[in-house]
Image 1 (cartoon, rainbow, N blue to C red):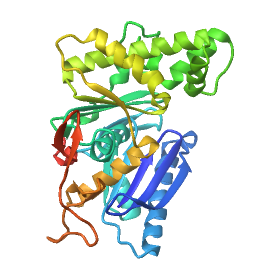
Image 2: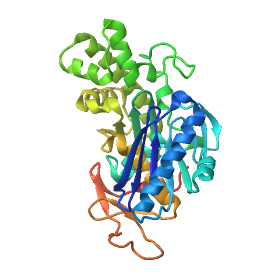
Image 3: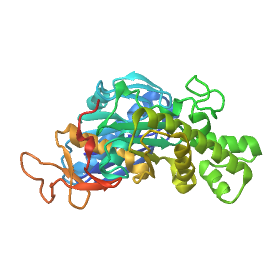
Image 4: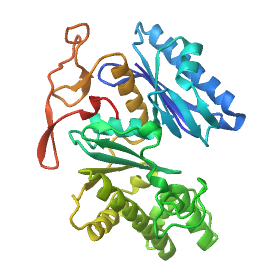
Length: 347
């Protein structure tokens, strides 16, 4: 499979084998400053380069998965809206197929990351999962009853839930959204605004918080409180058994997870109380999720090997050479569940 994760600043691509191991990789900047047409050109060129790398190694490409930000309609294969990349109702998958000659399945970057975490990361075996990516913005992937929720591409915009501790106008046109206080960009800008001292990003604020900087501590606490408020709303509505936090802010680990856990415990009464864990796949998640989507689009269900790695179920009615396709179970939240529940159709 070829997998490509297109971000607002960079693209991460790979040729992946049956075990989702990268055989060739590329990292390139996303030329968004040059306009949406230049971004489309860069994506197509990257896919062609990966295809040439695969061909040079004697590897036939079965399918291609591309994950992009914004509002993405997986079923219609269109990039409905992307403020970062300048797209509006773009038939992206069809355009890439036309330019590359490759079959393309299109998906949302955060949903792809959530599916990957469910298949081979922190949410292995869980059936109801909320995966939240906290970076420049905040978005979520919802897996309910083992299936990713699409809703025409609009599901999961948790960053635009209004929170009592939200700060002012949001880029979406609303006000008081979670992103205005708890995104990595908001945390860094809030610290700079209060102190007059620029920081490189939220990681610097996390480090200063750990060192006892009082302003950093207040900014961090405000962000964690807002996140707990939004997650309590999501937990009441969706009842996930597991919340997986990823993205740059989650790199702070316990500094973020512990106050979020405490905030949820304070706010939830009768609701199912989800476990809150850190994502395992890091910045590889969306690329791996795009690869999983490509594998499934090629007609191969993904099961799990005895060692926990994903592998194709069967190929042409036979087990894939060198791969054990016996489905196994994993232990999550104290009970066994069949792994890789996201093989079911999205809804």
